[in-house]
Length: 634
Image: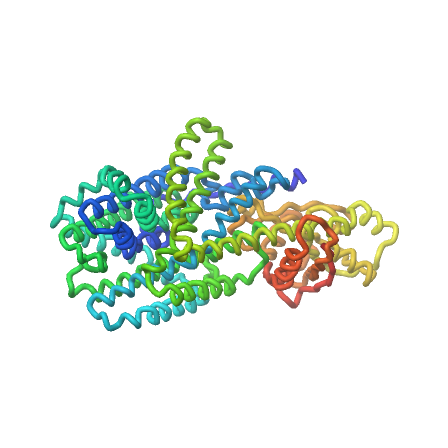
């Protein structure tokens, strides 16, 4: 096994540093946080009670320093250092801590549970973000045409339905214009804010943290927590900087934030604050009222386009996260379609797409307005940010950083995270339960699948024939050898797969050459071709081929076999005529093995029954597949 394990590491290239990469990151990374000005300042100011100058400056100061501390310092400077071969996100942190391979009942196993909860929280965010973003953009129509108010929800639902339908077509073309469109968006909202700041420069007092501190001291706990919870909406989406780091590299993402995104957001928020200082009635919709009347409708169209881009980024992120979870054994295999032949990262997952669609459209219809959705938004993201801070601190300790420095720095940011968690917890009954319930459900399914898969593997291990016994049988009681090659898939890298022993038992024959194929997912995002396969000759025409895939890759068995044949020069293997043997298991929740409640075993059995077939998942042509049915009791 040590010989096999050494192939789980890989060299990867460093993403290129360029202005083009920074602009490309604007749409994918900053679409969510870039559309927050549509609703964040408005809801925070409304939560502050009486709209006095002190309230406006206090709320604005809170938003500004949240952007500086949470996004600029915590994510851009601190957390993005915790990279796994260039990749970021919860999965990267779990890989760096080696939590996936932790023994049961260890502290790292507990971290795995925490990390899976964090990953599940992203699905809650994925449901609410498109709903509140598109809805808040369409609500701009009510300024000049109050009579269309009843049509806001139907228009939003129609746009979202169209967005989810187009996913199966792929987003390559749309993705190519994401960056330039968002560049214009940040320039436009920054310019709108700058004009208003010039008219009321007193708003610049909010650059100091003092207005925020004074406001919180005099507002009282109830109003203070309400404002903090609403102000947090300004930083939701900041976690995408870390999650999408592998697509563009750390420096282009930082460049995009500090040069384009942060200035645009700050100018717009301060512009909204300046507007309210001179015209308090602008609280109706301070974002749209920054623009002159003739520009309202064009701005609604532009804002809708920007929110569609933000929603698209969230949906694509959900596809990517689900694929990673499947590769790492946290979810059952699902159908994955590649929408671009030259871009492996562009995928479409029908089940995930329509579950997200149902959740998002259900949220729009149920809550009905961006103000109401604000109560549901934030709690999942704030908890995710707190989990990220804890895991990043543990990675820093593992890397040998001074414990006191780690405790001081990460402890400071954790206190901020927990304040926002507490503030958002006050919105639990207002709708915060919705994304939280969704996240708990997804985390439960992840943990059930992982635990059930471990029980199935334990049951298989007892049934699997040892290699030495099998090889001895081939010599002492050889079956009839057929011409050609058989590729037998197995989950383990030792022992003889059950499909092969059942085949010999019932058919009394064996191909002249047998390839025992295992696919292992590494804790690195990608595996280079020279490290893709490990070939072990077992003798008597039998070879074991272990293929390694990164957690961001889709397994390509045909390519792996081609590399294995080149490596060992299997001249007699004709890949187009190869016969692939897969097992088709039926899991019987008979209560045979301890380790999981009977009702959870039944849920796991149902998930296993509906999982995508192994052969289809690995892309093996159906005409070359032979499936052998097996029953496994757990």
